[in-house]
Length: 158
Image 1 (cartoon, rainbow, N blue to C red):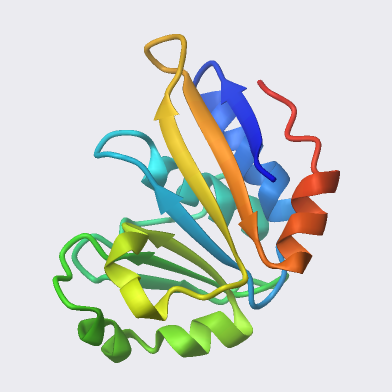
Image 2 (cartoon, rainbow, N blue to C red):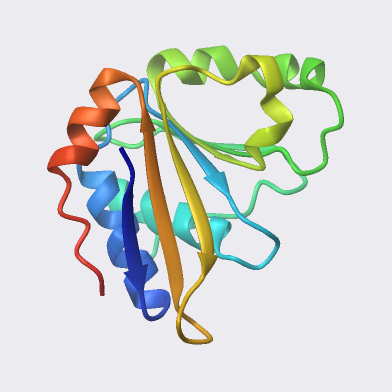
């Protein structure tokens, strides 16, 4: 079961991220798929700002640090960017299993996880949209809990 949401611009991406942040809970793993420039980091920033309930929350890219940890009031969020990793064994040094247990894990370039990919997760595939700034988000839940939440998720396009 997948759900497709089309947005027309960056504001739509931010609205979708906020909608998903509202249903997030500790232990959630969200895998962000898409080519360079599709908006994976923009989506993650908007998601973190929504959880923080602060549109001005400082959200640096984890491209060079590989992970940014946000101990937010509602729930912790770990934002991973695995682009520079070449071996899943390097991921062990990031304490990713701690994040999987206690936080929301937002993971860019999840193909690098290989055998570490959890079964219970939400895969988000981002594709070009009908306009230059538009995007198509394909939400693909795995695991009973995600399937239920995405089945009930409105995901209204913006």
